[in-house]
Length: 340
Image 1 (cartoon, rainbow, N blue to C red):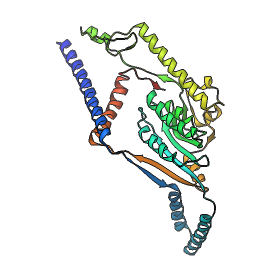
Image 2 (cartoon, helix red, strand yellow; image 1 turned 180 degrees about the horizontal axis):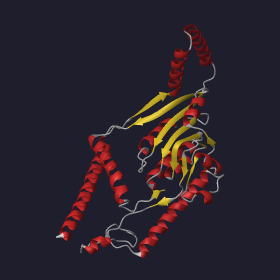
Image 3 (cartoon, rainbow, N blue to C red; image 1 turned 90 degrees about the vertical axis):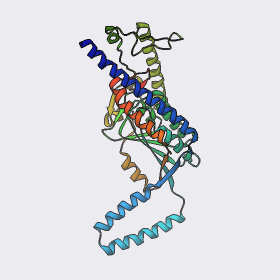
Image 4 (cartoon, rainbow, N blue to C red; image 1 turned 120 degrees about the vertical axis):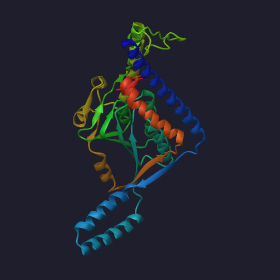
């Protein structure tokens, strides 16, 4: 009787997992169909100088005498009129990247970069406010490739890290001409990890067979339900080492002043220590840097808004549940490689 209860519990969990996977696959299929029909999105542009100016004026109005405040406004209006006649100020294009495990923000980043490259020149600057602890190799590989477009165009790229740029996040950060970090932000983690559970012995204990059929010697190296072999493990490890070597070479290409073998251990460093390792160039928050640049340049924040259909929104919600549930609870069901 106890066996039946255990088996029923195991079966219920397995069915729940399969149903969840099917739902996500259906949602993803709907998303693909929806993307082919949707009209796209639109680009929003906000001038950050106005934001800084409004905060300063509000504070001045609160603390200054009324006559002094009016006199200050007149002087500033006169100075602004003279500046308009002078040479055009430099332009700074501000982008934001808040990375999840799939680097899904790259869908917006690619359009924002395409837009700014239509008019940005080497006299301008791009500032990326980056926050990411890393994730899937192919997702962050694409995100990094988008930033390479800025470097290839000769436009200066400054990357600001206020909290974390680790693993795939650091692969993006290293492309910047300069990396600014908050003192206690997390940088590094130049390594690769892949993990997945194996329930073969549990299935065998309950006399449940699971067949894995492949065409190609290494089509499947490790599996969740089948019996893993030493040969499969060796091939899997070999693939991880190859990916790690590519990661190291990529970072070394853009950060030529650091000792890649010393920092490519999978370790992370706080901003203060990262500066000493040449993982960053200066201790400064993005707020401080942008406030300083606003005194001498025009700051434009770009944000591309995707139009999402109902199936896409459902798919995003379902995939988020899968990410927090299956990817963290069951670990990696597929042989995905992750920057870590």
